[in-house]
Length: 133
Image (cartoon, rainbow, N blue to C red; front, side):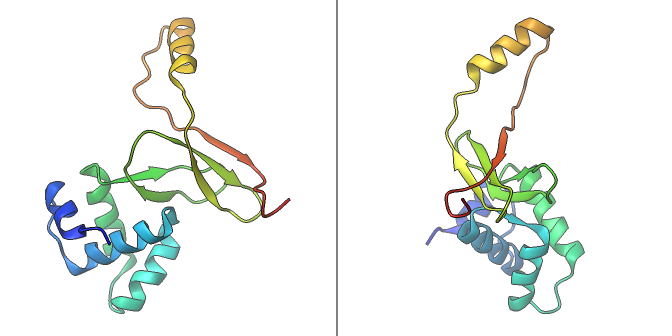
């Protein structure tokens, strides 16, 4: 089990019970949308509001602890920030899978061709996972 209290403090955030619960749930699921996160946190803290979930997610995203992954035709999901990676999205079951893809050559070509400086690239490839074939 991760030391979420220390992780929050390292990112200059107070280790509130709600934040600890949010991190535990995100860590367990790896990728989760706000609605599912809210449902699970509400089981532990029945008086918590959706606004409180958003406020904490925004604070953790701003402090570089969480990352929002924007999925095509789906709600965004959140994950704990880790090494740079891309994602596969199953169009049938909605599973999001981390993958390692080297994007440096692609971004260099685009920067050169369009005279554009890329500061971040989020790659989500959609298709069907092996469980749904």
